[in-house]
Image 1 (tube, rainbow, N blue to C red):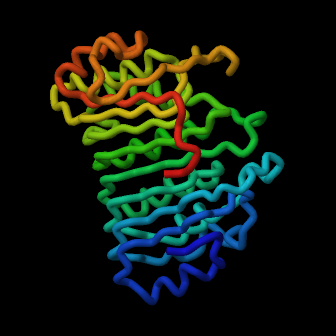
Image 2: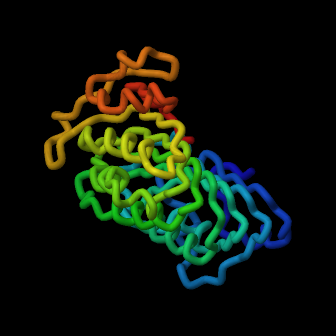
Length: 273
């Protein structure tokens, strides 16, 4: 377990421990300035053949909205420099488009049998955000068909309508996260029916695998409308009477009666996974 932002040579000496099974970077600075900027995409990658768990958690520092919007930060450096064919659990901070590209490249190169995936998506400058990162995240999720547990933490400053639309389309069930058993969405803002359809179609699928859904600090907002027009869902937890489900989710009452576990809280924990 490594804290802060280790030197760029860290992965070089990690090659001396080829039997390493867990690697965690904690309290990674969100200011995004680090020696990993010096690492280029075409550098040789190191293979960690036995690595099962890789985690990169953001720190609680102040976010710098004036930082370079697309630098090569710690997450991108680690992902560009690593190949992990046996990885089953991945938790990463994605604080730039460069990180999204690095993760996509990592998955294409490693083809790991992922079972647990946690993505903490941050937007440096919401004023210049153009929605392109949603397409990268959708491409990433399309490449992890074996994932059983997905936790996606979005940035409250921007919508995630594109991601939720991909989730909610019935025709995507067999190709987009077909093994998904547990879905946790945090700080996701999207049209309300994309949340409802995601739950309903996945739970009513012919080869149903979905067992639980958690919506933490999520909001409904019509596409293209200002942030001031979003609204919360209220609260609901497993064990509550089905009739108490927030009105927007009336359509899935039968799913709850059949055993789906649904948790909705209006306030999300103020930290990374």
